[in-house]
Length: 426
Image 1 (cartoon, rainbow, N blue to C red):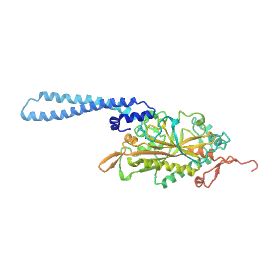
Image 2: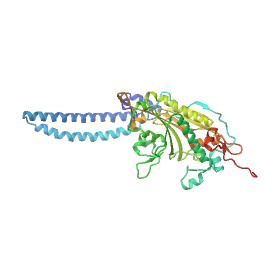
Image 3: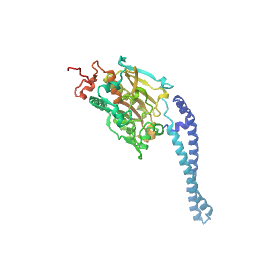
Image 4: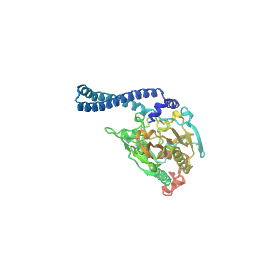
C-alpha cells in the first residue's frame, strides 16, 4: 500500500500517478472522505476515553470531600456505551477505508513512459533476431519430436496442460540447475517455498480481488496455489523486524507456479508457452530504501547475463505506466525472439515495489532508533517452460534436432543436441 501520510498530504501526487496508469482518480477522493470520517470518529472515541479517566478521578476526589457523585456516576455509565458505538463505526469505516486503500496502485516512477502498452520502450537488444522460413513454432516442433504431449494432457487434465517427455524433462531441470548455480554463486540464498498460501499471506504481495480470477483457490480451505514464488518469499519475512545489518536479503526461489491464464488465445494456447502450470526461478530482494534501485540494477543485470549465456536473441523493454502492474513502481521486461511469430515475447520481468508490499505484509527493519519499512524487488530469473520454447525455436537444426546451449550441456550429461530424427537405413 501507499503511505497514508502521502495520500493525505500530497493527494495530487497519487492522482497524477493514477492518471498515468489510466486509472480512475476519483478513488483518491473516496478514500480521503472515508479517512477523514475515520479520523473524526477516532478522535471522538479517544476524547470519550479521556473523559472516562477524568470522571474516574473526579469521582475519587468527590468521595474524599464527601460530595454528591450521582451525576458523575450516570455520565460514567453512559461513556462505555458511547465508546462501543464509536468503535463499531470505526470498524466499519476502517474496513471500507482499507478496502479502497489496498486497491490504489503504487506510485509510478518518473522514468516510466506514460501511456498504454504501445508506449513500452525498448532499451536494448541482444543477439541476432533471425526470421524463420518455416511457420512451425515450438508446439509443432516439440510434438513432432515426441518431447511434449498436450493431447493426452488435455484428456486427463484439460486444455493448456502438458506432459514433458524424454530429453525435454532433462532440459527443464538443466535450466533450473544452471540458474540456481548461477544465482548461488552471486550470493543469493536458495529457497523453495510452499506452493500454497493463505489469503492473508497472499494479500501481502497482491490485491487479491484484482487477481482472484488468475489464481486457483483450494475449495473449502483458506489456501491458494501460488502463481509465482515471489508471493511466498514476500510472506517469508511478513510481520518481522529485520536487523539493518542483514539487509539486503537476496533470495533465489524455485517453485512450480499455477495460473488460470483465462485471457490466453491464439498461438498462446498451443504447446507450453502459456500454460496453467510451469516452473520458475525467481530473484527476490528485501532492501533498505536507499539501496533499492541499486538492487534493481543488480537483479536485472543477473537476468541479462543468464539470457546472454543461453545465447538466445532477446531485448530489454521498460513498460509504460498503463502496462505496469499495480504493486510495482517500475517494471522492465525481458523478451525473447520467436522466429515462427516474427516477434519478441515476454519471458520474464524485473520490478521494484518500493515499500508497497512491505506495508501490506508489515515487513520492517531496525534503523538506529527508528523502525522503517523495507523495499521489495522481484525478478523472473527464468521461467523454464517459456525459456525452453525460445531455445527450441532459435536452436532448431536442419536434421530437426535441437542444439543445447553450451552452458546447459554439463547438466544434460554432455548431450549437445536432443530430438534428432534418425534417417531411414541408419
